[in-house]
Length: 146
Image (cartoon, rainbow, N blue to C red; front, side, top):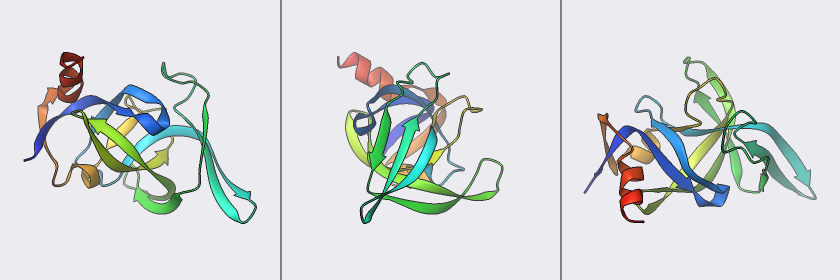
């Protein structure tokens, strides 16, 4: 059974130490993305690593924590203006409706955007129905169960 999600909600990303972070559901986007900066690809011995900092100093949840991951890829994605660009993509877990879902997030500079996280069709397909008149359905359920 598919879960109804609104246009706006909040989610947890335990691996990224983010709790109740604002997100926007965007059925026009295929890939989900997260706002970050200082993205660097590093060579550690024979392996490549990706180092990045989530959000930016202007965001209330910014904590200056740097993340380093071994598992990442480069992917061509269309930005919000329809222009194709290459971005780094990481795999992590998102918690919505008290359930864990695997998610791929492209690392993107979103400082000009209102929401630091955009959820695209790749996560939504087969699991969610979007009701654009609703907001924070998952977050309200989480608060009710605490």
